[in-house]
Amino acid sequence: MATVLSVSGSPSVSSRTARLLRHLDARLIAQGHEVVPLDVRTLPAEALLGADPRHPAIAEAAALFERAEGVVVGTPVYKAAYSGLLKSLLDLLPQYALAGKTVLPLATGGTKAHVLAIDYALRPVLSAMGAAHVVPGWFTLDTDIDVAQSGALTIAPEAFEALEQVVDQFSAALAVRALRPAAAGPALRPSPLGAVG
Image (cartoon, rainbow, N blue to C red; front, top):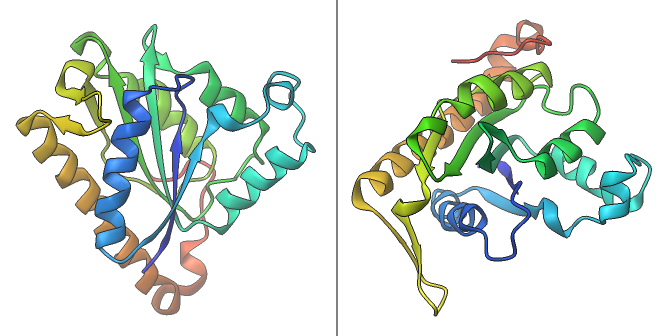
């Protein structure tokens, strides 16, 4: 149905955020989408810290954003904001790298005090980058995500149900947007502010 770029902004090798995203990727694949995973931590540090948009790895990442019709952005929350690693990549992308795209923001964190980080920290950035539609996201507590030594992921039932719902809403929004261009034509040109519903 659609090509989805699934971006993990966690700097950790054993990241709950990344494991959660890969679990949700499987649901999107089962619904017929092509999912391309991108772990920002695998990009060269010298390119990210040196703010080098011409570095081949950064150019390749930018191309992945350009080809995608939908983008899932997952991040751990540090000090009430999305990760600095994710910011370093977003800062290197073109200003309107999300133009015309449907975006699902997801976050993980250690306390409910950070639950509004998506709406107050991440969503404005995604909208400023031209996202056509930022669907309602979800914040998952670290304690609701358990990773066994085998690597198996277990999600607390309430969080599991909520995540399934937001992923299904994202998938449905992708399907609706796929039908719109032919019917609506030029009226769908993205606004710099994007939609935040």
